[in-house]
Length: 354
Image 1 (tube, helix red, strand yellow):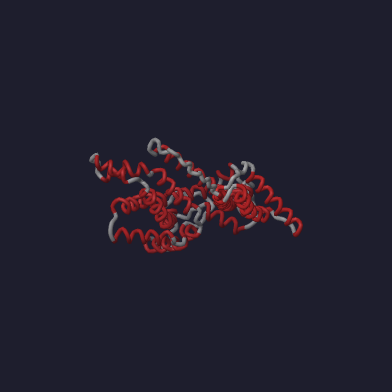
Image 2: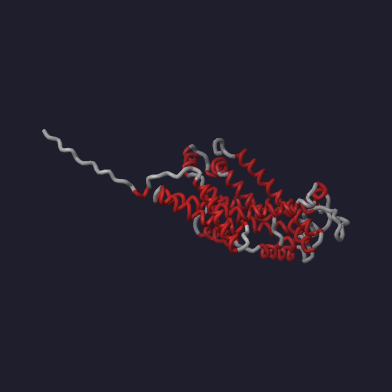
């Protein structure tokens, strides 16, 4: 019996290439791109940091793809191109954030001190460097706290209704209204609160409650939308398992759905608070500004950090430094609230969810 050997044909996938670039190649290409752009700009004009980084980054993306295409092949080159584009998008998104934090820190630290945080503006006139933002901090906490008390339960209950119970025209109408309210300008919310309290109390009425209502109009749709998305991410299998054990629906929502989504809900609530805590236009109309502390949220004008920063900046002189210090205080408050929210979500999240 004769066995005929079948010739074996070896095919090479040219799309994957034959070589492999060393790990230091991206850094070498980046350094070469930046150096080449700097040299060209130095020869034809005065180079700037922003221009060198931007043009060097573009050249790096093209050069890294070309090098990978000739050494590794088409598919690895596409992978490197996608990685470079995603990294570039991330760096571009970080530029305004980092620059904002840097500018606030650089300008705000000039007057930022313990005395600045523990004194108000009573008796401060002209270019006196004394005075602080204690009254504005208290006012911001009052206004934002009342707005949160109004918006958070309302937003969470609305989201639960839309996800767990809502069907038909009413649910669709609520969804449309929430989408419309998300895009309402802040000045419109201020006008709404001003008109509402003018009808109910009178045109001279100003209070933290009035400002909180205007902020609640802006905050509620953000809470509804974020909580709704988090509740929809909870697997239906968890609900069905609870129903199979005889757990009623309302208890399933509380013990299973909300408990599973608590981390995302907390994050969404903090995003909503950060959305309104720096609003200025509605508070100018509803709360106003004073130089001393007002601990009555239901009567009288009250200072808030955004309005304080605006008025001090408009005043000029040392007021500009106070406005930057007030902005730094506002950023610090938001950061502390975010840290507190992370601790809350970590404590109440189901075990093994991290």
